[in-house]
Every structure is written in structure tokens, then in C-alpha cells.
Image (cartoon, rainbow, N blue to C red):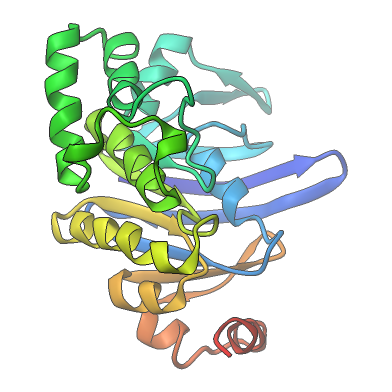
Length: 251
């Protein structure tokens, strides 16, 4: 589904990603873990071009995505071609990124109307279905400031799902939530897993990663240190850096 070839990202003289090469299979759930500042979120943002890699290739469904390397430099594809590829990837952020002036229904229909060009009636029907799918059928008319953090994140998930993505990218989707609200968001993500959705999840929820992931990737200082099934990476890590990180987060 998604391939990364020697992805590097620099901000000034600081190299945040140091040549990451990975493949993410269709239907696979991958959890990315690691300390703050290790490059996890930057990697996710490169996959859907919210950040443009300094070098390397991104391959989505067998085709080079977003740009070609010509004479050692990245030449971006046409905007319409980039948008077509990006629609294959749903993205859920830490801070929900909802429009405060729109209801839950409005937040979900916005992309359907102005992104996909659907008629309002059709967009509304899809949005209502997606809100019901995440357990918010009765909150369609609520504005973001009338929703809990967990409800806002579920609206954000519904908004992404409404675009019929081939894969979902989650950037620490529970980090901004109160502990008692985390479970309702994770339950929606578990449902997606059971439905076979391809997911790449940056998370600090180790119990959740152990339960849901096919594969766990540990990143530190912009590089993949260790990867494998949860039972190997989380319960029997091979590298000292992984062991030290897990000791800190699983106490």
C-alpha cells in the first residue's frame, strides 16, 4: 500500500529523519513508537506531504507519489495529481483540527462538498452515516465547543473516513484527551482494525499497540532502531535503546 525509500527530512542543519525505508502492506496495522522529538510525527506528515521530504521516495499503491527526483531535486507533480493521491490517505491529528464554526455534521460534509464536489444532500447522507459509525449520530448538530475531547476526535475520524481513504494515518490521536476519554477513541480505531483498514498509528498507548498492531516500529533520533510483532518489540526488545524507552513509558 505504502512504501518509503530512504526518506530524509532536514529543518535547517538538523536532520529529523535519517534515511527511513519501510513498507506498509494493505490491511496492516502499524504502530510507531519512540521518544518525543524522534521524528515519528514528521514521518507521518511526510507520507501525506504535509511536510515535503528533503530526499527519498514515497510510493503509494505502486506509483511514485507527489514528486519525481530530477537532477537530484524534487519536482512536484501537478496539484490535481497530488490531491488525488492524498485523498487515498485519511489523517487524524492530535488536536482534532475541527472547524469551530461548523457543527459535527458540517465538519464532515465540508470535504465531501468542496473536496469531492458532492451535492449537499448526498454529502449529508454520507456524513450522517459516518457519524453513526463512530457513535455520534445524536451529536450531528453540536458544535466543537459543545463536544468532549473524545467526541471531537471521533468527529475527526468520521471526517477522514467520509472521504473513503485506502489507509488511515493517526498522529497520537489520544494525547490531547483526558484519560477517561481515551477508551472511546481507541474503540473506534479497534473497529477499523477489525474491518481491515490499513493504519499507521503514532502512539504512546503501549497496551493499545500490543493489542491492535501487526507490527511495531521503534524510532529514535530519526532512525528505525527496531521493528517487529508487538510480542517481540514490546515484550522482548533486542536493543538497549528500545529497552530504556519502554522502561520509562511502561512504569
